[in-house]
Length: 79
Image (cartoon, rainbow, N blue to C red; front, top):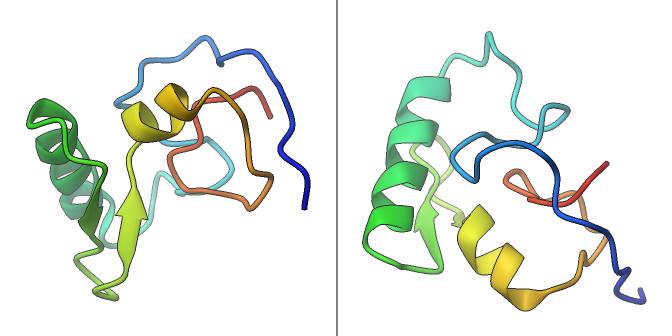
């Protein structure tokens, strides 16, 4: 899949992509906390508290400069 150049969305990097983490997700607070900690310590990602999978941060994805189009939870680009 080709990377697509898109502008950064007009939301803080601490906010997940609106279509990829529902406001009523049962683990939302834990996810946002893990993401915020990874951002604050400049890590590329964190372990999802529910699944244990590695999730990239919005900061890491923004530094890449392009959207991969894979539906990342913290995608910092416009939808």
